[in-house]
Image (cartoon, rainbow, N blue to C red; front, side):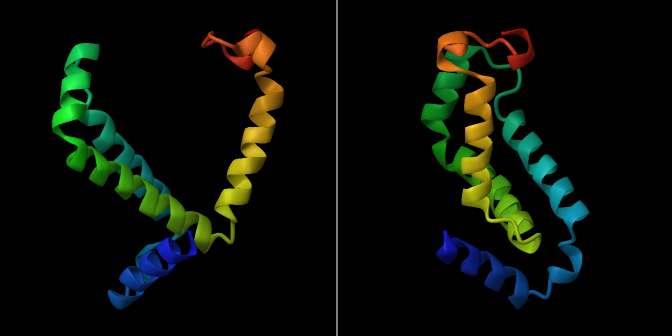
Length: 112
């Protein structure tokens, strides 16, 4: 992951963009890129989505990467160890969604 962060920082710094990459703007950018990803699937049923994914992996990959780049940079700029944060959140989710209650259901933890 460090090599990814190094490339993100270099790309940003070579363009002198750190001045624009405050937490609010990065969070907004994550949301915008996530919406662009979501838009690729809008109005498609499951069969259409399956075909679209098969035919458009590169474009989908680009949108996922856009979300990830901003997310990685936001975490980095805030001094958040992203892998550690992910592990901690998965631990919390494991407690909220125990396998014996959550397996095969999409019920929110407050209703399990």
